[in-house]
Image 1: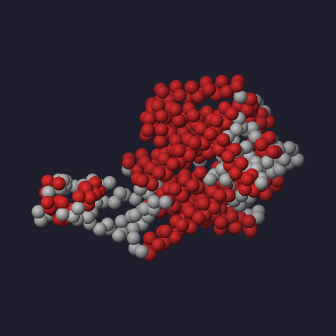
Image 2: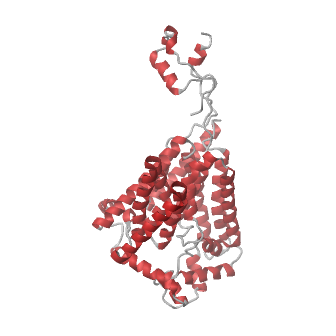
Image 3: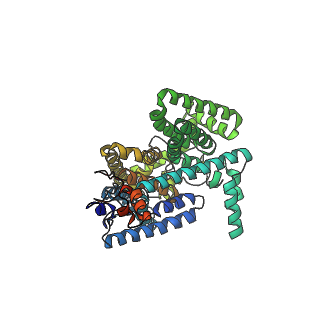
Length: 481
């Protein structure tokens, strides 16, 4: 009887215990949902960064527990600076110094937003909402794209376009962009043909959610649906990205034999689509040009990228220390164009970026930038290597998404562009925040589990004393939630 009061009394929570931020996952998901409207997504990101900064400062001043574990905060910050410092260093003698310095200053907004993303996945509830929400968003976009394959128009994009015309009187895409679209646009539209690469990079979250709900059958169903959309909507780079996702996620789940069967089914589907779809046939025919003996065939197969890569190597050779400046590729291209005056495979105008992560970093930020990127990658790998098994498992979807996105033996979107840079930094923060998430709060000595405390409260203050049998037996050690 002496200990019953102690057992039933709910101890006050430790004021220094991490409390989390319940709105952080929703803020991250809002940013992703608004990708079809980049201006609004950018606004949400900036507001989220400001809110995270205020929240962290208030938590610090109040002496309460950190919203992030120290290792998660450190790795998130290090990965950001591995991305941002090359941009700052390259701005010193960039082709357009003023613009480069402005862009470097503006991109500092990403740092508190990355802290917000890491906060969003700092506990089990946040990870469930964030990873599950990403899976739902990508699944909805996949179903919308499948509808576009059948009916010829994306229902989601049609709704967005109608809303924009009602508000501003202008469509999401002009007629010229619609006419030039050579693949499925989906919710992002025919003037922003990035759906394939976005779905391929974020597909690990869809596959992870499908496996948790329906095991192997869910993985196969999700892989089939997403893969079909990637074939219609994606560039050949996104085909390779999604193939990597299937290999790296499938071999652990279904084994190599069944995985080879899945890949064979994918190859058969591609062969059938080569007959049925003129757009896919054009991409496959272009790819086969790489088998030709001359350089022009290889350049055609790579959509003019050999010319771009030669220019990138020229820029790295002429500016080896810190490059031509982040986002300065287009201004530096004419001076390094190996075929000046010849119409390029991509049309008129200079190339906008190097289309390959190593060449982009080397040409725009030089050896200093490449070393900083490699340092960030090494620290990310070191964190994975020394993490325990449970931490690795919970971070695996984010790790896989980040890995296939920066896989160097592929072609890429511009990593120092607003859109793709934001996607890559988002994945980096999801990885760091999940892998090094703060540990679950240890139970307070003498406190009961939530269900026991709730039962005692609903019964009234005197009910336990009146009915000692109503007090459940409390084990000596209560497992943390």
